[in-house]
Amino acid sequence: MDLFRKKPIQVLLNESGAKGASLRKELGAFDLTMLGIGAIIGTGIFVLTGVAAAEHAGPALVLSFVLSALACVFAALCYAEFASTVPVSGSAYTYSYATFGELFAWILGWDLILEYGVASSAVAAGWSGYFQGLLAGFGIELPKALTSAYDPEKGTFIDLPAILIILFIVFLLNMGVKKSARFNAIVVLIKVAVILLFLVVGVWYVKPENWTPFMPYGFAGVATGAATVFFAYIGFDAVSTAAEEVRNPQRNMPIGIIVSLLVCTLLYITVSLVLTGIVPYDQLNVKNPVAFALNYINQDWVAGFISLGAIAGITTVLLVMLYGQTRLFYAISRDGLLPKVFARVSPTRQVPYVNTWLTGAAVSVFAGIIPLNKLAELTNIGTLFAFITVSIGVLVLRKTQPDLKRAFRVPFVPVIPILAVLFCGYLVLQLPATTWIGFVSWLLIGLVIYFIYGRKHSALNKTIKSEEKVG
Image 1 (cartoon, one colour):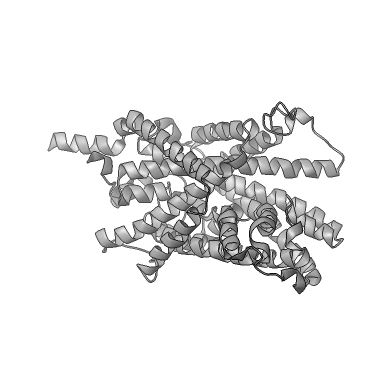
Image 2 (cartoon, rainbow, N blue to C red; image 1 turned 90 degrees about the vertical axis):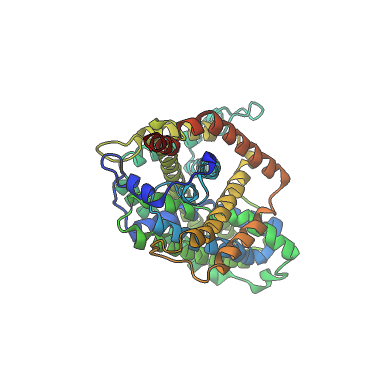
């Protein structure tokens, strides 16, 4: 039964406020909203929109975004309740520790390590592609061996730009959370301005006949499109990893999570409408659909700004993903389930500096050397698994601790959490069998690590055994 021992919420709160170990509380509602937008607006809007429209949904891509958004909104409300009630680093991992017990918390934490790690690597590789495209526009080309992951047939050995951007982000994160948040906010404003520029220019070239047929692949195509573009929304859960560094988290966490998701949903819907209105959907199967659409209507000068916006957008996604990964390692390490080095905090900047550099090194290897191919789909299944768990957790905690102080409460319980589970469950069933095999394999590796290391070094189990001896 020690596998399912739960960590009391008051203990979690006391640990986060312990002197000498706590992270610096410097973030407000605006910072959190910018973190959310920074994590959500990126690859999804600049890359996935074209592929999803051409191969799956057609002009009904807008419905795919709505379907994914509904799943995320319902889950986001559940995250907001937990984040305002348990404002501690670790996101869904920490919530599960308080609700379901240690073993399930470890499984979810290991799942999130996969989500953030693979997402960061994939995003860094995408950033590299856009950056090399920008350099090519100025007539600058890197040696081919340094332009992509290891592939002897293509003559590539390492993706140098991907490694350099990761190291830059790691350096920035070690400067302190406030400086990282300020950099993120500036870049977010740039990329939102670029997206608005696309909408203002593109709306005049929309041809309603391009929206016919509206649903060429049927609703099945819309559903598959929703599962594909879901990758575009996963960033909002990274906001909850910042809980321990937020001023007045009970108020600011729900604002940051919900507002960032609503703003991004509105941008996704309007961009997909304008995009499919400008270009016939069957011509959008390109890597840079937004820039392609502007070239299609001979607005090449705006297309240049779009490339800049894409680089800015992907930079902030990488920043927030790496930030979330480091805070997750920090929380798991503090609980003893990973080596204590991951929880070591800088006495001056109050950031987990060793953990941040180790995370950056690992992600650099994946992004710079190992071809990722379909691994990005593992990010989707890992995220959906976390969303389902958090939504069920709200129902469990309402039943087991009804009198717990909740600064934000999910409305219409149990309807909203159940809808979150149903929507996320439907999307996860759209993913291919190979993704499920990879996901289960990853979880089995995690269980081996837990029983070899984590269970023995668990801080909670050590505390309970000490208390039993005293008793």
